[in-house]
Image (cartoon, rainbow, N blue to C red):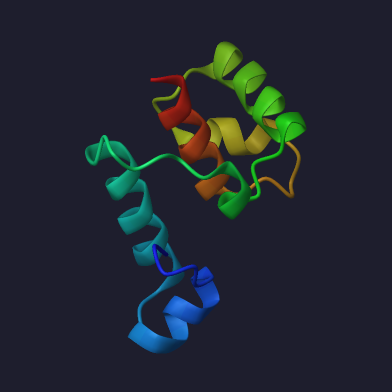
Length: 88
């Protein structure tokens, strides 16, 4: 990720699952205060971010599935988790 590689490129190089790579990136963003969250890398548009925030107001953040169920189907769990990190 830090070398500018896409998630798919990292999957091909490291033979890891997509969820593992996404969780590793989220962990870096959450724990490394020198690292900025990259909304463009995640594809988190302002429209998606606003939609996720509205969903969070309705259902909270305890279960990601509850958020996923009421937002645009194109919004990924990675985008939801990124938005939650941005809100902290």
